[in-house]
Image (cartoon, rainbow, N blue to C red; front, top):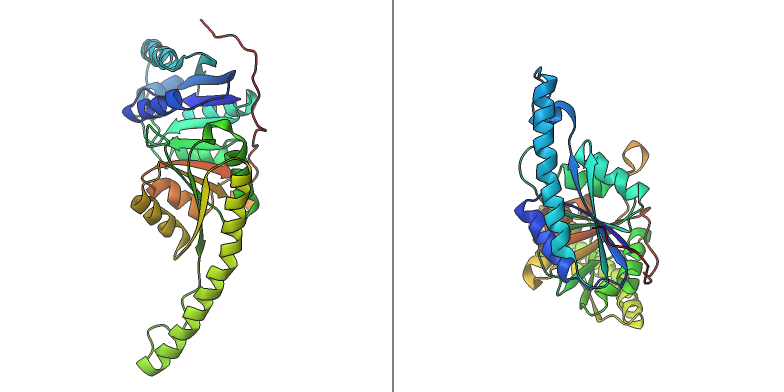
Length: 313
């Protein structure tokens, strides 16, 4: 199994490193620790100013040494028996460099912190991390917590949700973690909402009936998903919630305190087909926990097997 961990040395990246260090990776798993070093005047954050080549070169040398130290110390902190840790400095625009490396290696999972520091290689959610989630060829884990003692799996029965389910069922690091499977039943607010009381009562009765039907439709999806996960040896329960999908998922995580949300994303169509759907995007931005996003067309690795590899010195 190949895990690409992008770090910038920030506190949030250190939280991600702590999570990776404690996860039960399969024997022979490879974690490649990378940092993206911008090139040219991007190094100074002054792309609109004429800067001498000597200044850029001097700053570039300092930045490369800085990130080399970060990558080296991070990699050494992750080393343990059965795990192979590699180190690599990337060059160029951070999001593009991370995604390109994930494709070329190829990675089975990309891990990023949810927020970074500074203009150089920052990972502010909505910029670098969000772009990596949008374009990576494999699932992406955006880390907010240093532990993974419980999981909320948000499903809707879609192909992307089935991809995420496959990952939960087969990747060994999720084997002993309890999983709460949720689906959100939604019913459109009736057009007559807010009318006179005598009319509104009839409208709300119709809405209640629609909500009941929506809930009944989601129950089999949740029950079947939880059953398949239990058949795979996982501890899984199912629950149907009601309301706006993203807001309801976030509120449920806040109430129950899961450390990780796993969610699929069907994405958009046409020119924006690579971008996350609105539900996954809102959960990614607002959830208090780490979020693992599995896009519909992302490559999901088969169950990992022990691999022979050599640690880089």
